[in-house]
Length: 211
Image (cartoon, rainbow, N blue to C red; front, side):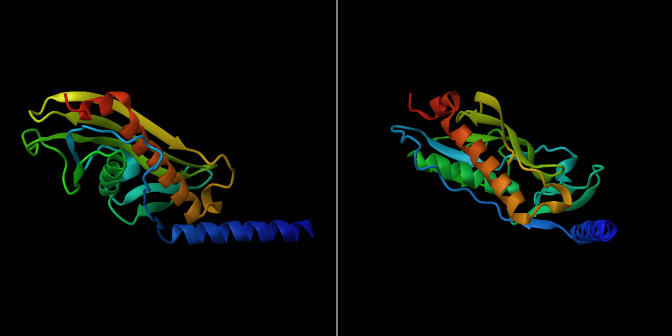
C-alpha cells in the first residue's frame, strides 16, 4: 500500500515538473493607488521616466521576464513572464501613486531619462531597477529593489535613494507546487510596497514641494 502511495506521489511530482518545464508561467502586473495616502498641496509637476533595467541574470535582459520557478536543486524549471514590460508597469504605478497624493504627475514610459531632456517646468523621477522578480523555490517570494533619483530641471540630482521591498507569503509549497496566482499576488504586493514607499519617502516628497 505504502509503495503504491509513494509511487503515486512520485508520479504526480514528475508530472508537475514536466508540465512546469513545458513553458513559462504568465502573470498580470497591476497596482491600485493607496487611497489612504495624505494629499499634498502646492507641489511641482513631476515627470516619471521608465527606470533602467539593471537586474542580474534573473532578468535575462528581457523586460517581460520577472522571475522563475525552481526545483529542489536550484534548477530553473520555467520562467515567469509578465503581461507587459516591467519598466512600464513601475513608471505608471508611480504616476498613479503620485496623482493619488494630489501631485501633477505625467509619465514617459517608453524610455529612460537622459540628462538635458527634462520637460520645462517639471522635476524628474527616474532611476534603475536592480531587482524585480517573483520566485518559487522552497517557498514563494517577490522582491523589488531600485535606485530612485529625483532630478531638478537643470539635471542636478536632488535626492538618490536605494529602496528595497519584499513580499514573502511565509508558506511552504514552492517550486513545482506553486501556482500562477501565488506568484502574481506576491509580485504585485512587492510592487505596491515599493511604489508606496517611494511616494511617501520624506526626502523624495520634499523635492516635489514648491520652494
